[in-house]
Length: 340
Image (cartoon, rainbow, N blue to C red; front, side, top):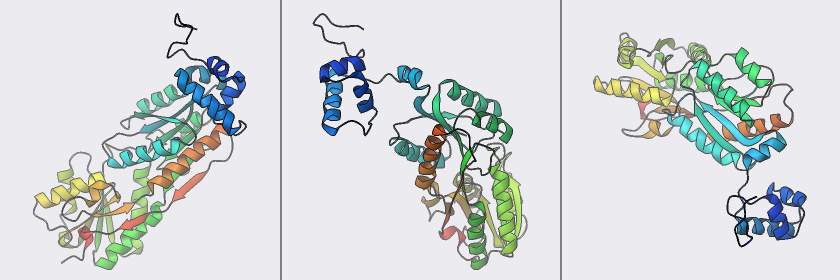
């Protein structure tokens, strides 16, 4: 240990032994107090924390990891940072990770299979407490392989595989909310627009199937178009037949915003001549000209359940997978008013 000439511990080199001597307690008691253990009396804990503050103690995560075999870090893998839904999810996870004293470490995979797997392997080598993967493009076989070695929670896809807990939206209910609303307003045709180049996860298929079924039940015709090459082309194709009774559904609010821009640029009166709806109810859905109808996901609940699943799985890696389903809300705006 490095000390100054005056015998004081230099900042950045303070250990739990130093705190113990300063507070007049054992090193084991210091460890318990710094871990916020309920086994330490309140006055003693306060004295230890005061000593740690006075000495400028900074916890050495690397050293702690060697002892516990895990780091107090939770790996968070996102497809990208372009979608504002992910920004909201990050904020919620950062807040919920505070209680179990976990530090979120964020990485983006750009929907690249090899990159996702490399990130998971890196998190595994860092000995993180667990991983939360949002809408992964990685197949269930690879996910199951990682799930057998580290707590892994998937957000956005249900029923991934053994030992892998999930938190996902009730897609059937969300689709029914949209389809019934469209039918009540007088729309006759729904077109789902997605981008399978920017997003390659299983959620695209699940959402498309849910919308197809719900629109059929509501008496609406349904089709799906990929905007992978050009949003302008996708919107143009969607509007070729029955344009004045059609509502376009973006896979998320980001895509719905692009749809809205193309329609207005082509001179359509959105909400009267054509309808627009999205998913996630992000800030994009309620900005400018009345915004657009969107499905709201309970971010706080998704985050809380995901963190809880990670910490629970960290205590028992093997066991039946927990599939948590959260309920949607339909936020109606002027973009799906009654068609002319």
